[in-house]
Length: 97
Length: 322
Image 1 (cartoon, rainbow over the protein chains, first blue to last red):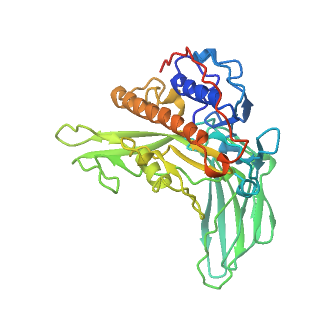
Image 2 (cartoon, rainbow over the protein chains, first blue to last red; image 1 turned 90 degrees about the vertical axis):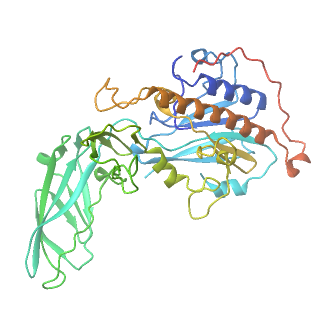
Image 3 (cartoon, chains in turn orange, brown; image 1 turned 30 degrees about the horizontal axis):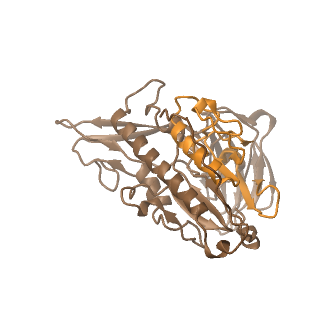
């Protein structure tokens, strides 16, 4: 998604969408990677690992990882790998020109 | 992403990725300059030209390097106001005194050279460089509600003026002024950019862009969501990839703005909130469908012990606030 939804605030309009993602991701139980943009600064976190009080989500979702890709202002893109053999299923590399 | 890596891996482990939409039209301001090659004089055997770098961005450019190449046999013989090196292609770098370019300011340097062909017309080469940016200047608004296909307002006397108040590498902020110079009131005018973006990037929502197009699932095939092509999904390497049309500026709740902070000239709360409601509902449905797809067993996986078992759904007390 284009939006950068975390940490966000209570009135940012994302609570319903994030709640839905959290519910499904928890039920799914496998790694879920959310890739976002908008704020243009590379960032990796687990925004739901202890729930998300800001968006009134009290589910702890340890299997969800979020990456914010660096903005195009630095001419960088992200190369994503999916390797079911690796302990970390998703891995990625920042490619700069 | 690395398709070869996907092809090389196969194991019946399904995962889901809620992937990205790279339609970023806003962000921090970076250097963006217009780089021009201006022929100032030419005669039968030679030419002089200025290369002008204009900082159209919002921040100062600290140091610059540009390059160009002649394709008509021309060669430069002298240069001034820059450190020019190379032998077609040429590179020019700043000197101490002209290395910084403030926003709105230009620097120029000159070259003198010989033409490749006597009495030929000196071709204008393209000037490139990191400061010149890798994207084209922002486009003119390609379509406007209440206008014809060429962007001309159809209502008599109505004109649209477009100006860019801020431009950076991958985004811009523009002002559109709609002037009614006619004799009657104009109703239902609109400025439509999303339709133009969709026509470019989602002309065929059931396949990817690119030379080797991959088939996609598209929400636009669902009744009621025909106009929302951004929500797409595909399955590769036993992974579900899904794009979600969720946008910044408070998921689209932020008022539409004009050229000044607090300028609500262009805001239309009814249309704005209707768009947010429809798009959010579509995104929620697409989240449901994407995870359902990830849970859905296929023939290879159904015979595999590593077929994932959905965990219990924990009830949530979360209260949507949007």
